[in-house]
Every structure is written in C-alpha cells, then in structure tokens.
Image (cartoon, rainbow, N blue to C red; front, side, top):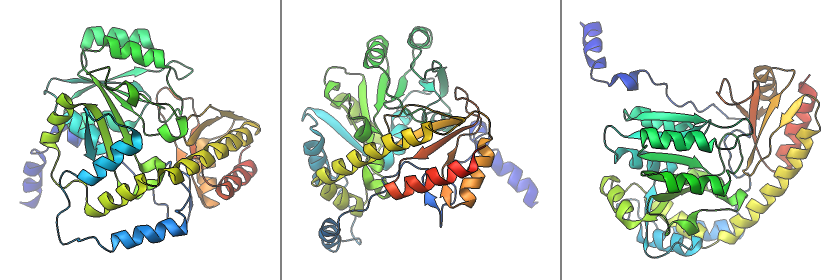
Length: 361
C-alpha cells in the first residue's frame, strides 16, 4: 500500500521537475574555501561593533518592513539609481530570476549564452519554460549573429546576459550587448553579480531601454551571508514583479545589515580593489605553471584548464591538502579538464598556488 501511495504521489510532481537534479553545494568544513566567489576579507573591528549595536535593536518578534523602505533608499543613494526607476529586492539574485520567469506566459522562451550561470536554465526548467542556450565563441565572446538569428526565429521573452560571465569570467563587448538589446522584443536582464571587480555597468543605461533590467547581488561584494539581490528597471516592469514577490522576503537582519553596509560602501570598494590586485597575482602565478591554460578574468575568480592532467585528480588532491576549489566537470563550451578558483586573501592564494604546483604533472 505504501509503495502504491508513493507512486500516486509522484504523479503529482511535474515531469520536468522529476527529471531535474538538486543544486549541489559541497561540504567545506575545515577547508580553505575557494569555490564560491566569496569576499575573503572580514569587516574592520570598529565597523563590526557599530553593526552589532544596530542589530541589538532589532525586533525579531515583529515582521520586517515589507517594502524595505530604508534599505531601498540607502541602495538608491549608494548605487546612484535614478528615482524614476523601480527597484525590486530578492532573497539573492536567484529569487529575482525566479520572479522574472514566474511572471512570464506559459509559452515563454528563455535564452542565454552557454556556458553561463546555471540558474537561468535551472529555474526555467523548474517552471516548465523553454530554454535555448546559444554557445559562446571559442574565445568566450557572444556569438551575436546566432543570438540575433534566435531572437528573430524564437522571439524569446527573456534573455539573460551575465556581465561578467560565470564561469568564463570575461566581460562581453558593450556593442554586442547593445545589439541584442536593440533586436529584442522581450526583456534583457544584464546580470552584474561581479560588477565590483569589473567596474563596468549597464545601470546608467536602464532609463534608455524599457526592456532592460539590471540585476545585482551583494554576495560577491562581501555580504554573501545576507542573501540579497536587487533588480532595477522601468517601473512598469518592476511593478509587475512586485505583485508576485512574496511579502517579507527580506528579513529584518538583512534589512538592517545591508542598509548599514551601503552606508560604508567605501570599505567594500577597498576590499574589491585588493581582490583585483590579488587576482592579477593569481593569474600570473597560474600562468607560470607548465601545462596550465589560464583564461583572462574580469571577475573575482579564475578559470583554467589542465593540458596534460586530470581535473578530477587535481581537485581531489587539493581537497586532501585542505583547499576546496570548483571542479567544472563536463560543461559544453568549456575546454576539457577545467577548474575554477576564487580569488582569496594573499595567504589563501599562496597556499593554493603552493599546493597546486606540487600536485600537477
């Protein structure tokens, strides 16, 4: 009877969901964590003391402000968001991707270059939407003629463009993004998760294109534990997304902390600058290793491939040595035997380079 009941219950779940795999986050306890593009630097002691004093005044027995008014005001000032543009807050950028796609019609088509951030396809699949991936060129640039062809043929409702791209770490050419913006009848979401390290943005163009949405997360900036993302665009679009945003999705501690952090953005800007300096050192160190092909980076991570060794073997050996990086696996569009490492502190990077130098063949 139990088995029969289980079979009946499984039929309630949409087939596309049953075919999916859960997003796996590896265990990192006790390891130097260089797998998730986090900011490695702690807050200054004085800043942390001020923050804890603010948190002590929080009232966790009460619901948070559903519209996060103080946080939005601080965000607008910090990132110079025009007052006529709308802002939507999400529990990380993942929730914002989900909100955008939930608002689309059932027959909507979603497009993104591949490889790119896995959540574009993952969330589209979870909602039963059609997803079209357009392979990048071999140098990881956008295949603009092919993307324009797909736009003409499929008329995608949403196009996601990560700027810089993950996992390839490069910035797409502005002219290519503008060509896609001009051609698209649907929404174009420019995902600027790694903007603090690329120092380029489409936020100042959001007023010029009604179909443009600019999305950011504070995770890479140094606030990964908060799970906060924001979406900026014309208010006629953001108003629609607000209708399906769940109430109280930004908790009271996140609201207090992010508001405080935005008022101290110079601290995070200085940390981003240090990460960029460490990135250049890491790129040079990896490039000097025999049998390692290193790709340029505008983000806070470095993608590299092994020419005569196994990514699986190197990954496991690094893990045994106490360093966790990202094993890319079989990702279409990436060279074989690819690995990705987050730019850490100077100490973490030196440890990683020392260990991988002793491991690779």
